[in-house]
Length: 333
Image (tube, rainbow, N blue to C red; front, side, top):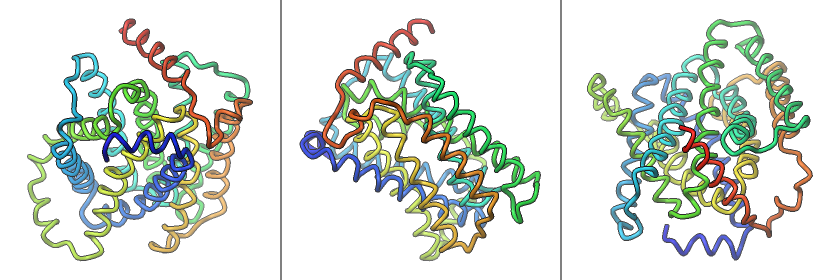
């Protein structure tokens, strides 16, 4: 994970898109891993394992590459704390607790809405234009949310548990959208693995008080078999440690909304793996709602700026615009 990896990506930009495809695969499968463990050890223990294991990996990585960890000004620490709260605490709380109520397939479909939130937050913080096309896409996605909220439960019937789960889990893409937008300017100055590592560790520290009330997590870990360990490592090492680094590498070379496009593939991998590994039923209402959300996301991001999404181009003006927009936002605060 050395700094030489970023220039390699710039010389071979297709690797950026390949790495983001791998991220989509990891995140799709991780919903199955989380659901499997939530049903066995409960959401709070899954949350602590997920963030704890991944932050431990980052501690080791940063210790091995300590020469690349700079001294940060207080303003950067404040921003990283905000990124950690949104992208680590809120995102993971929503995913683990939301899946106590809904299926892994539905959870993966809801996460598809991340580009919608990214668009709105980019408007608020960076001043990106909110066109009629984007508004139409947001409306489509909202319709999809309503469908899965009312009919996404088991048997395609209204379920209070399903509604609670959807409302909780929608906080995950909201938190991740903040994570995506606010991290962009930092990546123009600092190494992605440093930002990913420190924000994950900060998020783990924010969640650490929960450990005091959940010391019995040690007995859960001691009872793990091969399947439980595979699920635990998938949802933490692959879905956070490896995926966050790859995500940041992609974010460094592309615009936030371009990177978010790869979220489209998460529900494909999520629904497929939930069906294959957990035997979850895929109802027509679930597909209709998820498809409507996906359509909204595609409409939102289907801008005329086609050439900037090609494999061979890395826009250089976006970073400056993002930095300026966030600087103005900080000044207003």
